[in-house]
Length: 236
Image (cartoon, rainbow, N blue to C red; front, top):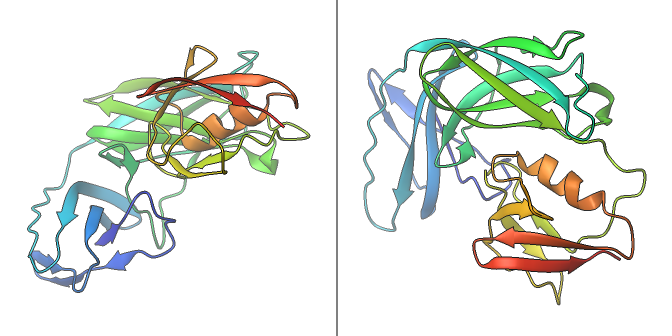
């Protein structure tokens, strides 16, 4: 059993004390958490929990049934299939990927046509593909798995010289959520990025969103649509 705060760097997971069918986290700092259960390297279930100072938060978890997800990973710009990507599923909780720690089930490798097949818990799932050699961004998004499910995910080639966009998003939350901004940026902490230059990125994983922004050449301007409206960003 693990708990973590999605908008923080996921390098400080909290492990529960498990006694029979009950689990306890002690001395958690106040905040919003994801809580999930793993067995044999596989996530079984998960839920969101808000922890308040001086109070006990109670969470009930029930193991979810499993389903097969078949998918395809392609290049966003060209539509070409991407072979050799490592693809896996995790539970998505309130738009964040639940904790994956310790030994994990092996991922599925995409074939020459970009196709892959993975096992996933029924419910909201984060489907992810990581391309070897770091030539592409991560690919993926959140999908509703109700039974056998087909998904399409895209990746973006990394630019040779990334543009300085003046902001960064959290690593795990969909839609991508701004966690740091340079002085003078029109973005604000907590902004959720829904589109870039009119193209929806609302269901793209954060690494893909950042790579799309950084692909803009120096001296150009991109328009980011957030929940507050359209925000032009100058690339330096």
